Length: 297
Ligand code: HSE
Image (cartoon, rainbow, N blue to C red; front, side, top):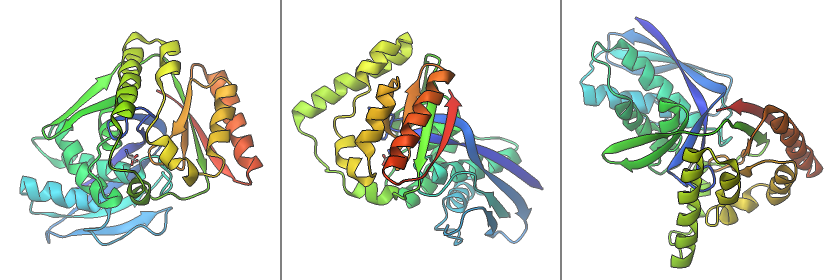
């Protein structure tokens, strides 16, 4: 009557795909252990490693997602949860999504008729929504499906796994906190038509580049003309760090989700190591310490 599930860190947006593109990282992740209880209650027993996360079941992403899944599937037993956070809070690496996904995947393990991956994304999304104040599945979808995903629609839930060339992701997590809710709050709700056209061209070309495994097309098309300029000043030295990454050979360097972490794509492990050092050095120049991960996808 006890089950543990692991869910990986993810990186959302990938520059050109705000709220619709994301990828799974194999660097770190969260674990949730569920133990059945017979009083029908959902209780968070313990959260390791990270402080400041809400313990109230309807405020925590993992317990809220679990609660919604139990409600919709008419599951009447309760669960005690233990959450083991491997992903730092507010890091832009999909921590709130990973806890929610691990919870619903663990519950799925108890079911004699397990639900589909699309359904798991829907349940986890309830949790994500309370954390970020928006319905975006660009972390929960790659977390459940793996690889690089495109979300065509939330209702009905349609997730497409994209092919991709051999890529190494560098994630640099500067020790700054950016809450997704506030990073979403600063975005202008409207886009000028000309920008929309230019951005659609970049997104379309980037998807072609993934399908054709064309690194040079990917390099040219990974341009975020809309979100990056609005969020850049949330991270000290953002453009300098980006430039340092590109000068060292990164294919692209952009925000990971809503930041403050940054994501760089590289075409080899050696290059990823070089880019990591350049990005860290530039953050250090600005007096900012940072953690780093290199993850193949
Ligand atoms: N697409 C979301 C955003 C991802 O950029 O606000 C948050 O991780």
